[in-house]
Amino acid sequence: MVKSLIGWFRISVFNLMLVAFIGVLLRYKIAYALPIVHQKHLLHAHSHFAFTGWVTQILMVLLVARLYTGQQNPFKKYAPVLYTNLIAAYGMLFTFPFQGYGLYSISFSTLSIFTAYAFTIIYWSDINRAKQKSPGDPWFKASLFFSIISSAGAFALAIMMATKTAHPDKYLAASYFFLHFQYNGWFFFACVGLLVHQLHTWGMQVSNHRAIFWLFALSCIPAYFLSALWLPIPLWAYILVIVAVCFQLAGFTLLCRAVKQHFKQLKPLISSLGKWLVALSGVALTIKFLLQSGSIIPELSKLAFGFRSIVIGYLHLILLGVITLFILGYIVINRYMRINKAAVTGIIIFIAGIFLNEFILFVQGVGAISYISMPYTNEMLLGAAILLFAGLLILNISQRKGKVAEQH
Image 1 (tube, rainbow, N blue to C red):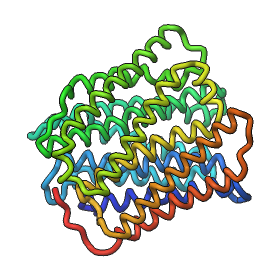
Image 2 (cartoon, rainbow, N blue to C red):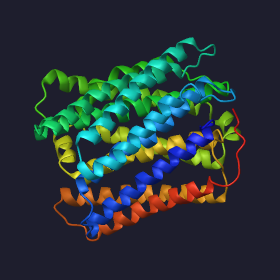
Image 3 (cartoon, helix red, strand yellow):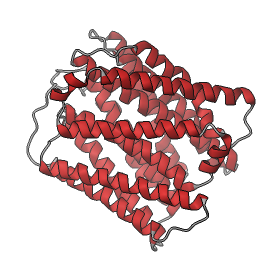
Image 4 (tube, rainbow, N blue to C red):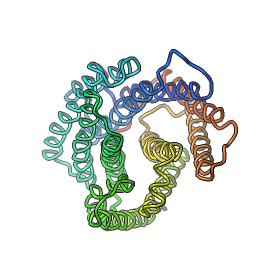
């Protein structure tokens, strides 16, 4: 049984490496030929395993660590849930490539959803009973709430694919529903909760914290319509979208100011690597909010959602640039991993892969909008995917030697 956060991190970051490896296969098939691989089926495995095997797995672990700081085996109670989530993740990894949406893959997908339900029920109860309260707790509760909401989109997708009744508009609407409440709900709120909790453990308070939380919380549901502006939505929904974007920009501005107030105190507490990871995550988040604000113009939204490279670039910007870099930064800051030259090298190569991937997708998207074909983009995207995988391979190898003293 895995008893430490470091052990669970090693499992999770190994899963992230597998996600990157599948990404290499997907990019190779696009650039060259790989007849044995079914592109769409493998893509489903790639996305589901990334969400369940990497982000959800590590966020569950980090949320549990917040509750049981200092205990000898903090994961004993949650071990059944964490192992079940792993089973569901690997089940999807090994069934989606062969059958797409079928009996077994849908069964494992459903198992992952019910596992999230179980984690929510147990964790919500424990956080209410926790003796030491944290300002990050409302964020954690909201993240779990939005995780549950996102499952409606997953169930809708599974039903449509299983019954072969997927209309293009309904399929996209359900897909974006699931993605929105995962990315902007479960992932985002959990990460901000970890940030706020970390500042709290260092004795630093986030000014206007209550206002920041409610600005983001109230805007999350109506912000879904940002992903549906290509549909003929009613005027009231469009007005809600504008209000939601304004709320999020206000909340993000207040959050940045609140963190900036503690810069001098934070400098000696955070290593250079931790600073870079969190700073790059913040830059990616800023770009995300700027792009999101621009998408309230219906013409721009239809244009953006009409080009696959732009959609993929945006999704990777959030998953890799915002969420993954923040999680790695949080883990580095708390020393939940071995930090040596190999680990630093691996992370730097991984960051280079993210930057190259986003840059090429951006250039490809701009070229597509202008009806200009960019040469060798598929080969360059394959190169970026190899960089991502290589960085994570080195990071994984760096974690396999020696022991780390956990600092709880």
